[in-house]
Amino acid sequence: MYTPQAGIFALGTSSHAYLEFDLLDAQRCKEFASTISAIREPRTTTGGVNFVIGFRPELWRDIALDAPSGVEGFNKEIRGTEGFVMPSTQHDALVWLSGSAYDVVFDMARGVIRDLAAQASLGEETSSWSYRHNRDLTGFVDGSENPTLLDAPVAALLPEGVPGTAGTVLLLQKWKHEVAEWEAQSISQQERIIGRTKLDSIELENKPSDSHVARTDQDEFGNIFRRNMPYGNVADHGTVFVGFSADQKRLSRMLESMAGLVTGTRDALTRFSQPLTGSYYFVPAVESLRRLRGNPKPA
Image 1 (cartoon, rainbow, N blue to C red):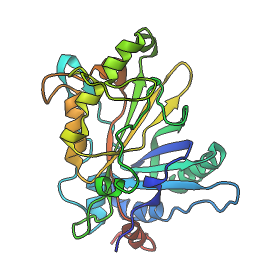
Image 2 (cartoon, helix red, strand yellow; image 1 turned 90 degrees about the vertical axis):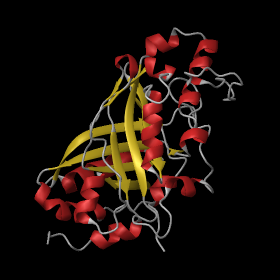
Image 3 (cartoon, one colour; image 1 turned 180 degrees about the vertical axis):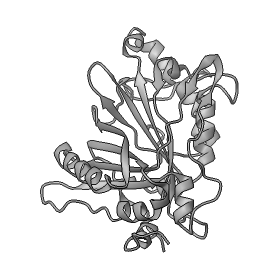
Image 4 (tube, rainbow, N blue to C red; image 1 turned 90 degrees about the horizontal axis):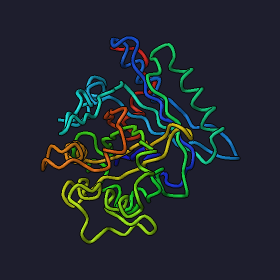
């Protein structure tokens, strides 16, 4: 029996930090994996921190016997129609922290960075927070078609009996919103771009083929469990896309569709939101992480 990392499904947390690391010495990958797998949540009675640990898929194959086949990092940019590009910014490992209060998340993030400093550099750090319960900074509800928590494990986790059981593939991207351009659109035009009503998030009956809902239709590409969050400040902000899937092809095909590489029609939302980063991580089961502890020296 394998157990998924609990932080994947820990809904309701309002403060987040995404820490992406790059190995200083590739020959010490097993020592690094042992250190990062030994992360513990803080002991506190006033609030806790959930965490999710992920590895670049190629790195996980180097250090583990139960790596799924065919999963790859975000190793090259996606070049879509009309010059649109999704960049590749792949790192070696991710620690995603979430909690009810940012002070606890902040303190734990500092501790994680300190503990890994001798083995890895911090390549990317992003902090995020909830906005109006479940909306992103476009003002629309985010994740309307997310599976329920009863169904989410089926969509997100590799099934029993395959390499990587109870693990998941995570797509992490940071999208910057072009605020002035977006807010210059009327509400009805924004709704056509998204494919849903803004107030109550009802899917439009005659949504345009280039709407965001049409270009990311889960009925076509398969279910993805999303944990998106807003990031940034008043002048510079956007969305951190956090998508989990049992099948990486669902994620990659969704991105290709958004870029206009599936039907030739580009997602209209990409005209108002710019991708800044892109990484894939394999998030192994708890038991797989536990096996890495206590073996800090590479064989």
